Image (cartoon, rainbow, N blue to C red; front, side, top):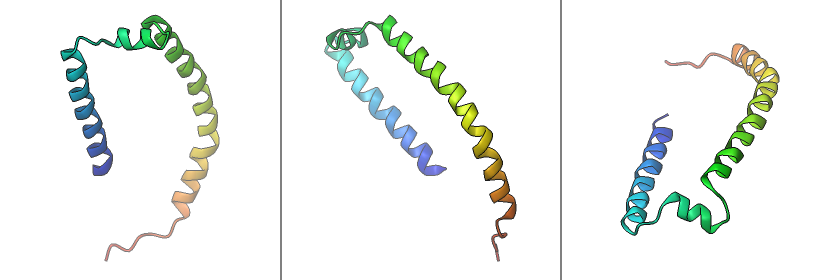
Length: 82
């Protein structure tokens, strides 16, 4: 868990540094998106489409994965903490 939190913190920190650097040179997210032919609105649409596709598939997969994980967890030998 510590490694995950550390990685998330590092990503946030370096993103902040890079964002500050780009802001210093007056470069915005809209400018970068325009360079690749996207608008912020189109990016939002694509994000919504991805979420609309992913959520039902995650739910469908979890109907199989979660019960299998529970059974494996219940039948796992206890870890000896001694």
